[in-house]
Length: 201
Ligand SMILES: Nc1ncnc2c1ncn2[C@@H]1O[C@H](COP(=O)(O)OP(=O)(O)OP(=O)(O)O)[C@@H](O)[C@H]1O
Ligand SMILES: [Mg+2]
View (cartoon, helix red, strand yellow):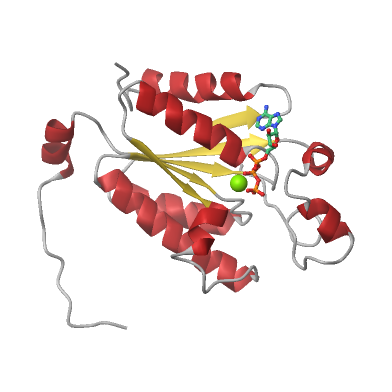
């Protein structure tokens, strides 16, 4: 633990936003594997960029290739995974980027900690529950993970051998088995515009 450290202040977030002409926020996607988090997050990121809004996606697998390559999938490692992502996403949001995270993030406690971290600094945090029944996710199985998990080859697989705690107060509840990817993107964009969180060009 570092003790001899002092926070070095910079521009206020408002001052920074006046230069970058946009506000930062975190859009926190959560849902089962294969629910569509990465697919929708990628489409949303591109849509926002096309509309002149700087947006960046932090994705589960991608982050595990680098920043979090020392972490596995035990509950403790998943907690640490989410803690680091929340901190990184908050930094992006502080830099006035629309930061989109797509991680299963199965534990409510971890998502609530991510939210609190943002709340205490007044950075908007929008939880997006990408909801599909497990049967739908398992039928999609784009990475063949459910098949492996059923065969006992992946321990602690969310929805099969590890819990998924569904959000109770997500700002956006997206039924990704009923809406297309494009409709999902539109729904989220409409929410952001309506709440004054983004301005499209
Ligand atoms: N309406 C929809 N929204 C999102 N994805 C859909 C939809 N309909 C079908 N799909 C398909 O479902 C799959 C979702 O996979 P994706 O990798 O996005 O899931 P994920 O939630 O990111 O999973 P993981 O947690 O394993 O990374 C893709 O193959 C996608 O094409
Ligand atoms: Mg994904």
